[in-house]
Length: 396
Ligand SMILES: *[C@@H]1O[C@H](CO)[C@@H](O)[C@H](O)[C@H]1NC(C)=O
Ligand SMILES: *[C@@H]1O[C@H](CO)[C@@H](O)[C@H](O)[C@H]1NC(C)=O
Ligand SMILES: *[C@@H]1O[C@H](CO)[C@@H](O)[C@H](O)[C@H]1NC(C)=O
Ligand SMILES: *[C@@H]1O[C@H](CO)[C@@H](O)[C@H](O)[C@H]1NC(C)=O
Image (tube, rainbow, N blue to C red; front, top):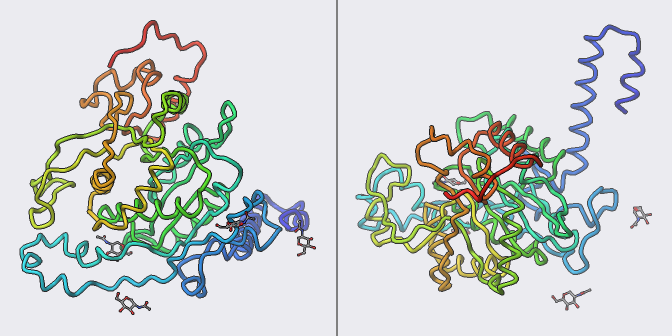
């Protein structure tokens, strides 16, 4: 179709040709979006809230996706209706009036757990055994970070017979943003890469725990044959090779069933400084935190992910997602393992430290937090250069 559009105008000036091309391209894009309506559906899509997000991948054979696994064909996301009115009984609690106003929204909607999906990929894990699923928390606007991750540690490939797949977890734009255009952009991005899961809740800081529980449920439904999950932010450096080596080592030691490894924080207490992003008022929580891992990145086994899903349904949501997972682990009697290769607070707390730019450190680490997309791309290519000679194992 695009061919036709272009051919008819052969010989015309470049500029009208170009704009015609753009028109054709957007027409094609909209056409494809309409075709995949069942899988990808914008907020103004009328039927979407009434029907389950049953993707078209098995009902139509025109799709380019791989064959469905035999017994998974009936899996679907069962939270179809957005029904999250506030829990008015909370307003009557004596602590509610004392509670810092910025937590009101959270406690009033705390009971709302599962949300409809706007973009789903039920086929993601269905294509044979997936050794490692890379799951990345992102927000719509951080397109450049996702690009950098796709080109580096999130590249889907098979490494030494072990298949790696990648997914980005998104909510909807926060109020005040150009919602409709952002939504169109993300749907277009997903048309190209097919690696986005999007739920119909606003992407705010306190809603990060929703991302956690909706993903755990999604994983339980759609990924019965994944072995390990790495969960991280979109601004981390991950040394995929070292991560796979860590898994191999844990499997050899038979320590993989309850595997949960990261930058573990023990004996932390809630932050009472109101200026902090992590501030928690006494009314909300008044105990020390259980051990938890910093959210920059951690590795877990799929068995444990499934057990976390089951236990998470028994716990009240907590506004800090890392701590919420720590609470779930505690209920399962699992202590997250500390590993020095996970540097979710950066290598050195001083950003200017030359260590933060030393490739040999990255070569021996597993996860390092807070890199810009360009820093990630640069560091990745340096670390993977054959001739990078590191005289001795860097000690950090
Ligand atoms: C695909 O669909 C067409 C028509 O809907 C049908 O004739 C064909 O047999 C299908 N192919 C497969 C592999 O199911
Ligand atoms: C699919 O799973 C169900 C139970 O979960 C089982 O009874 C059935 O035999 C399975 N079908 C196939 C084709 O494996
Ligand atoms: C929405 O939730 C409220 C409270 O949980 C319930 O009373 C109401 O019936 C629900 N509505 C729908 C359409 O499910
Ligand atoms: C979380 O998302 C829901 C649905 O979009 C929204 O109603 C709610 O206000 C959000 N909660 C917070 C604490 O931002």
